[in-house]
Amino acid sequence: MAVKIRLARRGRKKMAIYDVVVADARAPRDGRFIEKLGSYNPNTDPASININNERALQWLLNGAQPTDTVKAMLSYRGVLLKKHLQIGVLKGAITQEQADEKFEAWKASKEAAIGGKVDKLTKAKEEARQKALEAEAAKNQARLDAIKAREEEAKAAAAAAEAPAEEAASAEGEAPEASAEGEETQA
Image (cartoon, rainbow, N blue to C red; front, side, top):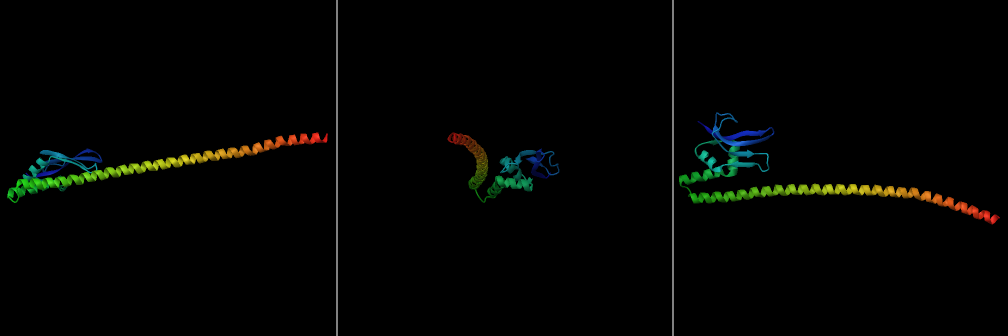
């Protein structure tokens, strides 16, 4: 029986989540499987890969063949490197302690790279949020300035409309007085 380590789809439409399973090569994609090793969620950034590394290594050493996608995930998680180092230990090329040291060094560098990517994504998201906030504040300020300008124009127009009316009223008030004074001088 040929055994494969592959993905089994689950989740809703256009939001797929996959289970990493060990199954007979003849079984359907979402059908019967021997063991579930973990899950894979490509919808997050970076993609979430949760695999039982020890069980995956055991299946690889027993001869299970991973599909291309699962092989990439196992490589990302370091399972294939651990298998390579374990084969070296079995052949006597290196000791178990040396293999463990090499794996721990690789794991530390990988975690640092992943942490750096997560920090970079978080920083980019925060900068985008800050830029959007500043753009919104500038837009609101421009809107307030436009409203103030309209109010000032309305006040100026009202003052201009009142000024001729006052001048006309004062001119009318002065004219009768002047004519009254003129009548008094004539009399």
